[in-house]
Length: 317
Image 1 (cartoon, rainbow, N blue to C red):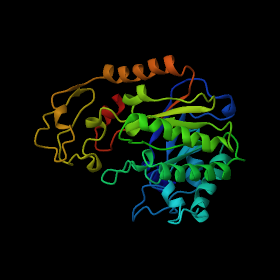
Image 2: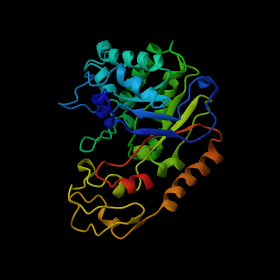
Image 3: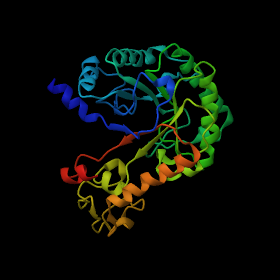
């Protein structure tokens, strides 16, 4: 089991605010889960697609820790051949994972981490699906296929339309999500489907979200704020490994001249990071929900702090 414990270092914890769950999911809860990163998405040489570093033994271990669901990030582009047809062989690893997760009494989230024309990956961002009608139709057809393929599965399976969209305009996300919901509902009228907000599923763009009148949707958000703290020394966040340590709560040290890919990070120098500011972010979301979507389930599908951060600051955050 030691190897499996090491593997679980790739997982990010999920939580959910205590709103009432949709009735169709009454037998399954989605309050405490994990992401299986770099298995069916964001693959590289040491972590090729569907490699055997993750298997049913891991699922059993996760269940024993008290988790009630697993979110499987999937690169939908891998499921599609260049000619637009479906590569069924690429779906089989997820089929096995779905069976493992169900067998151990947990729910499953099928998260489309990437789609044709939709990528949040730094350096290869793609927003074409939000403005290209033909591409959007192709993606809707893809979701139509996926939904139909899993239509017979019970409420232990949920769909997540797209991870961390980055449409150039917040409003562009609304018709895209509406089109995907319409395609899914043709075969899955009551399955819980997660919608999200623009700009990396941010709390900050929730005011521009239009939710369809659908009793079986839920909202998923991500929280990595304050970014200068959670992603300190993370190369993909544009921060060097030798940058000064950022505490939480506490004051951001002087970062001027120390962040090569600035991205506004240096402007955080001298800023005080507080628990109150974090609470205010959640309060803002709760207030919007109370006004625009009372009772909707809200799922914080990703959050976390990078490993180099000191343990006390991680716990405080």
